[in-house]
Every structure is written in C-alpha cells, then in structure tokens.
Image (cartoon, rainbow, N blue to C red):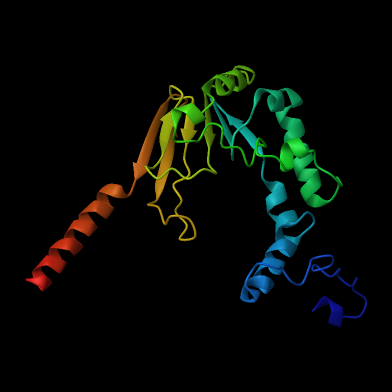
Length: 211
C-alpha cells in the first residue's frame, strides 16, 4: 500500500537477502520458511515490533526467568547488558551478537543443561553457582525443553521446568500453569484431572457402543 502512495518513503523489501529455495525441504514449505525468516530476523517486522520489547533474562523476587538457562559466566557478563545487547541486535542497532548469546548450545536461549530427564545429564552444581551470583534468587524458571511429565522441579527445587509442549507441533501437551504466591510458594495448575475424567467418559461410551 505504501508503494502506491506518492510522497511516502518506499519500504525496503523484507525478503532482501533471503534465499528463495531450501534444498532438502519440500518445496511446498519454501514460502512459509521465507516469510518466517523475513518476519523474525533482526530488523524484521515481527522481531522489531514485538520481540525486541521482551527481556532475555528477568529477575522477579526470588526467581530468575530465562528461556533455556543461564551459566555463572553469563551472569558475570551482566543481566542488564545481556538484555541490552539482544534488544539492540534485534532492532538492528547492533550488527553482531556474541556467539555466547546466540549460536552455541550453552546460550541462554538454547541451553538444556538443567532440563534433562536423566540426573547424570543435569549440572546442578553450575545451576547453584549461577543462582549464587544473582543476589536474592533461589530458583531458575525455564522453558525450551519439553517435560512430558508436566511442570516439575529438580536440583532440590532450584530448577523449575515449565515447558509442557502444548503446541500440536510439539507433543500436544496438556495446559499447565506455574503459580507463584509471594516468593516461596509454588503451585502447579493443571488440566490433567479434567482431561482424565473426559478420557474416562469417552472410554465408557466406546465400551457401550462396542457392546
């Protein structure tokens, strides 16, 4: 629409520098991939307008909220500095973002060190160290790694994993909510009891029809 109006600055092509084909992916998905990349990359319309306003790390009371996890060395870098760097990168004010914040498996967004099911795969000592370097925090609340058993805690309650995979694109998990009352009381609100009743009713109906 803006391109049709005289006197208005012509908008940049949001697909500029985005490839038009993706070998190894079915062609029917190419247009969707291009649109997603265009919208969510740095300076993209969705990234700049919405994602740039979100914080990468947030401390509320005794809880630190982060998508994947955070390590002691990242805390030392500075939580406010992390938020500023990511925001400036998304909006285009900063050309590059440190690989420690973006590209590796140990970044704040991609980390799974504290979310694994196996005790041997978790690193509770580094979690405790990270929390010890954030004044007043007792727990880290994270998503990213789907918990098939629902919201749960490990590392003596210091790691709270809340990703239940509700999207149909994940595991179509049941909705659950973590409620924090004050600073110390955590409560899990789940739809599982209702789901179990509905499933039982469906099974009873199926049995009656079969009979």
